[in-house]
Image 1 (cartoon, helix red, strand yellow):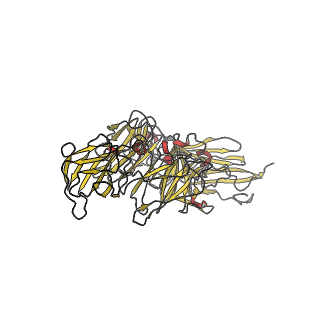
Image 2: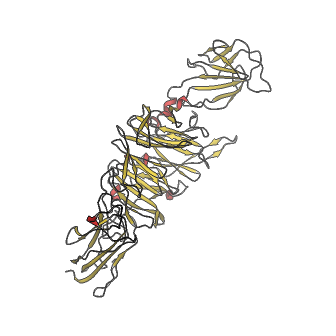
Image 3: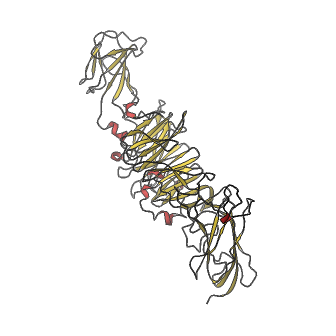
Length: 610
């Protein structure tokens, strides 16, 4: 059906485009709505939703090796940016200097979260903590659980806390009877490390105050501890017993999800290659404590956990795409009969699985992730219903899904936009531009090139990314000097209209003139290209669009314009006896912003196509 119901032979109003959306790579160019572009590059919507050229980026630091992760810690001393480059971790200074914090990091992606004013880093080799001054393995500062309480000297008592996977250290507390000197621990085979004890709060030393039978797990005091008063534990013994593989369960994790029901009280870790369908939960507000009983097998062993999405009071666990196992699971929170926390898991339907663990981000309360079929969003909390996931990227899938290595894609959310980078290309969803399609909310998308991001980090009002060649870069703000260049290089930006048939496929048309209203900038320019079914792309107009500026006077492109309102450019070039017409607006000059508010195409309709 014709888009334009305009009969031939009558005076024709021009085609005016002044409402703009994003790109549409999903259809033939003749079928794309005139408000969208079938081929736009390095454009984004401004606050009034007019297409403008994106800002560029500056290199703020240069390391040796790939940037595997960028991490942010905000504290009393201000925000800090950390960079995992090669196998070392650095603090990035305001002057671009790199201060090494630790070595021995994995040559692979790292991820981080903040809890309790500390930054916790996961790289699949060592689980580390940065307190703002120093980096240490979490195992060195891990919580020591009290595994038994209320035990008589002969052993027993009540199980209290589970063993911490991160440390072989543990405690047991007893109620002395005043005569017994031997105190039986709940386990034997202790490590050779020193055993310590406290009797009524007073420290006792091994060899001086007591001896230890490590094989039997027995501590014998030289003098019997005094009797406990009012059934209060008065003897605490601290010892170490290493269980093979315990620490590696947590050190080997690469993924995290923070969840606790209504509040973010615990962290769940996953991504251990040796147990790829298992996750482990931390203690309450304590990422240094991972009980050996606090693990969950999520679905079948053959498919890995890929990431977490938090929505309201539920946690969604998504696994890799597979044909047999469910890919979606729902975790909720409840209390058991004794007031202890439970995190029941419900299996969802098989559906879109995740392809990249670094694509999980929340855009305006909607969790998004990349699957082999495109970008999906979590649309509800009922995991067993098909409406749980919605396909969000249909208009860009033709290009996005043709990218090689989608597993390496990395995403972030910054100022209401979802950025997804892969192979130097960036696909952006704008949460301010939402429309309905088939009953579900969809975003307008934009496409950028020459953005070699392999990891992202939002720090204050700035967006940083790392590259495969060791650069740490920051996107510029429009008011900055050199804001419209990519690490020194000019930015090519353009907007292409769909092929227009002007309401009829059966008659020839003549384009009589094209008027464009560019946005005003101190220095800008525009190139206008025509394309038709008769002739390929050709440049028909090129003009500088500057405002008068004493500080940037250039007599080679002098302008008397001083008022910051859009000007109007007329091409004055006709295109005769054509069936289809396409317009391209372009700017590829160094340090020049670019944008426009309206396109007007004046045309006439001629004889029938024979």
